[in-house]
Image (tube, rainbow, N blue to C red; front, side, top):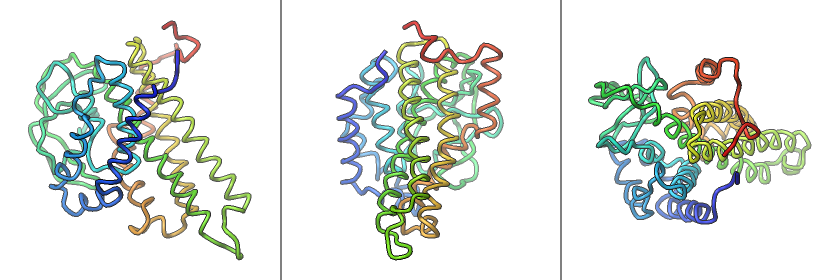
Length: 308
């Protein structure tokens, strides 16, 4: 197995990264927060120009890798649009996207979007979104659902993995902006980047980020190969990504100081809009419980248990 994206997918991700920057970059999420109804007009055109909705991550291996690269680039700029959820849409339902939801208080980042959504629980129950409740932070709203069927088990793995690639992009950005910050922030007449304690902290954050990247590639391969334990691999990736996000954002906020919580710094926006990804459909403890319940005593197969 080759645990890396192909050259075409990597180039597609780079092109998407540049396209989002040219379209507005950091300003996109700020404009969308002020006027959520603009989310489609802010992000939709550039995604269409990139051919995002022509990708077929379910049937085409190259399309799956390109979808992952696109989600990562979208996360890097905190693009105010549920790219991963759109790309994960089921092939047998006439909907625009798929949202993984918890059994209680199903929610999604659908505020301001005029789209048809399906949902699926970890148990495979699929529903159609027929209404929204009150709007919360991060474009999140509780969803009113109408049941469709119980045949969504095959949708869960992809629906979990792609949002983790979005979160990975956010971790990329948090580490990048913090590297720049410690080069210019000074204490005792020198950049804090020269302090060994700061170097240790940044190393901790980078190790966590790099670990998620490797697991994301493994989980993507697991989905692509159609492995029977792809959902377990996806849950393991999500758990690792949530734990890494705690470390990365804690470290990067500490190294920014108080400015890391101000709207003048992009870290504040990326951290804020990582929250829906980190809390929905399940937080760290609930994700760990779900993974444990599915695995029982057999454990994860991992790389050495793979036969494909």
